[in-house]
Length: 228
Ligand SMILES: *Cc1c(COP(=O)(O)O)cnc(C)c1O
Image 1 (cartoon, rainbow, N blue to C red):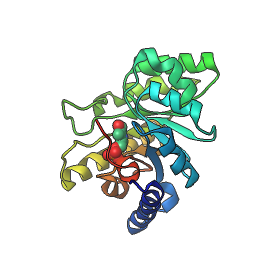
Image 2 (image 1 turned 180 degrees about the horizontal axis):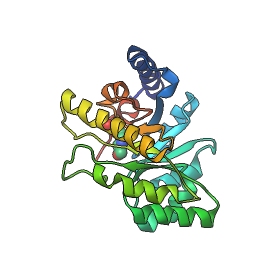
Image 3 (image 1 turned 120 degrees about the vertical axis):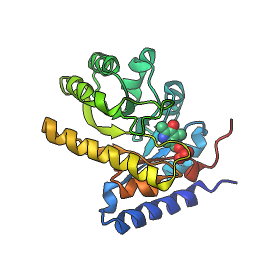
Image 4 (image 1 turned 90 degrees about the vertical axis):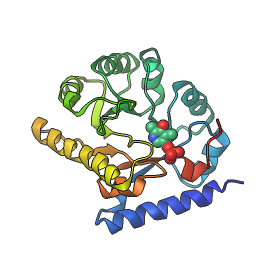
């Protein structure tokens, strides 16, 4: 038996405690409850406990949940987005976290325009440089920002990253701190606000918060271990 309500309460207290221990205002760290693979009933339990931001990594699953769940949920698409799914994504998700190419930015802009939406996007950066990781290299970030700030039908809000699966604390600090420094440099260079840093999952969110995360994406610690 998974106690979603209790897990959520514990995570919330832990987010507040962690933010305060880093001298950050707790409201600057928001929780995206990652509900991928869990049934709509699990989302509803978290919803009943007051949770309103949820993350999904597949458009099809997102579609099923959006149609079954209350419409004041803010949906975050956190997985890699294929170009043939963009049309649905811009209608279903208010946030798209893993934007990783100019082509994708331009397609989101065009299809959001067609559908009368304006999603908030985050550019996914592969800070660690790990080959297997998704996201663009730090050196490519400027060209994507250039493309995004020309778009009318999307809003660039910041960056997202994933740490290597088995990283030790020092590497987690380097990755998450690296994303924050990149953000600071880009915000200064372009003269724009890039307020959001989506980083930190169940196993590494304490360090992500210490390094400036504004959105943590937590699944397992709320809903339990995923099957399959
Ligand atoms: C699944 C997933 C998460 C949540 O991971 P947990 O370890 O279950 O907290 C966060 N971010 C992304 C991109 C994911 O795919």
